[in-house]
Amino acid sequence: MATRKIIPKISDKKHHADVLNRLPTCWEAWPEDQASVNDSDALNLFIKRSGKNSFAWPKKPVVFISDAHADADAFEASLLAAGAIKRHGSHPCEYVLTKFGKSAEIMVGGDCLDKGPSNLALLRSLAHLYRLKADVTLLAGNHDLRLLMGLLSLERDNDVGSQHFFVRMGKKVVPLFKEVFDQYLASSQWQKGVPSEDECRRVLFPDEDWFESFPFYAAGFLTAEGIDREISKMETKTQKFERHCAAAGLTLQQVYAASMVCRSLFLKRSGEFSWFFRKMCLVKQRGSFLFLHAGLDDRMAMLLAKRGIRYANRAFNKNLRGQNLFNFYYSPLANTFRTKYRDADLPLTKRGTKATIRAGIYVLVQGHVNQCAGQRITLKKGLVHIEADITLDANSRKREGLTGSGAGATLIDKKRGVVGISCDYPRAKVFKPNHNGQLLGAQ
Image (cartoon, rainbow, N blue to C red; front, top):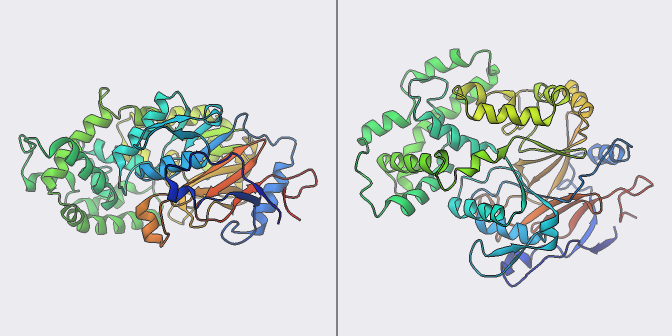
């Protein structure tokens, strides 16, 4: 396959030098290896649908960065890799938008939080983008919404449907509580007004009857597989959550105190991060592309076909402010940021695929499913997906055996096509069909 220089150019190699030096400096037509395409039909169907008169590219370039998972360095390195920012200092948030960055829409694909190492630094970096007047779209991720559900559940201790939401966050949220405790509480008299260790355990954990009551409560909302999976997951998390907190140097009293600070930071209008959930939306359509965190099911596909994107986002925001956390978190709305198309998830069938196409959506661009060799084009239930979670954060990279820090982005616009940039793939992958229905650059 022919290769060419990548567009846009990678800017400012002085900073994040190790990461930027591992990024591709040339591109090739989207390869058909297993790391890049799960099924040859996926690429062929993408080519076929992109040739239709009804197919439309976004009106302005889209830079899609997903699943940064509290790694501020990886997030900023990805903005650099996309050519959206340039540095004017060596510290986080010391950057400005490039000409390209000012002209593009920066689509943050969800899962900004959890895992670490820098939840608060990433949020502040994202806030800096807003201060720069960047065109930013923030999509809901399951890890982001799990924090919201966990914090809200602390005032609903008798609700069978939601009393497990705090512990359900699991070990991946513990680094956030550790950061908050160290930055806001460690040098204060944090114990004042905090309940005893036993009382904190009662408030934070589901009660003894929950495991018997939940299957009856959830019947009709979740599939049988979904209920079994939820019970099994909670048995494990309930047993291990306190242990994970202790490993991070936190007692349950300290976790409770940190969670109260998080409620102030995220839920109060005056909180430093109160903008985070207010600015969040569920889905965005740009041309024939639907951007979201995870995927669709039949009911969401039908809703988009009948009511449209604006209605879905309004329903999402209304549910965020609602009182019934269970109905929201296990609904088709939330399935959009949770599904992995497992048997336990709400299903997508051919009917849903047809509804999606009726809505003018030919391609889904998602995060949620991490890849270790750059972006991948997949076919799910006859619907083309671009899997753009390229394993950015340090903890996931260590677990996957990937070396160095993560960086990369997915660029989508009419001029360049779909460009997948990743430090874990030697060339930028480019999907841009020519007039003959072949990928540009292919021989």
